Image (cartoon, rainbow, N blue to C red):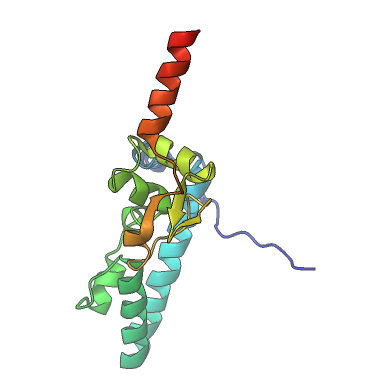
Amino acid sequence: MRKITKKYTKPRRPWDKERNEGEKKLKIKYGLRRKREIWKAISILRKFRSRAREIAAKKDAEAEKILIDHLNKLGVLDAEAKLNSVLGLTVEDILKRRMQTVVFEKGLANTQKEARQMITHGHIAVDSRKFFFPSALVTRDMEPKISYYGGFSPKRVEKAGEAGGEGA
């Protein structure tokens, strides 16, 4: 049986006013359900930055190229970026690559929360296959393949709702 481990760490000072206000703004801006999602993004960022510090200490050019290529594929950095730019990444750079945010920015949903709902209800597809995870990080390769699933169209749903409202 597999032991499930946490993918994040809680803040050391849970009632820090400045951090709480910043997290609240991020939660509203990106339509997140709970602060735990921000903490997961912080953990992802922390891992990338610690890898960059280790690589800088060892001065390993090959490992640096692998890390930069991985972040480029993820869509966080450009291909010409240097190791110092990895250290300059912010939590927002990670949150912008979530499926929920990408669906909203592509115009498939009107709001961040609507994007989340459409993904969890199975109305969004990647390469014509249903996708149910709003928190998944989207690679550059996946981004153009995101669309509505099957015959779903929000305009068709609105028309059906209007027709149902007139007959009642």
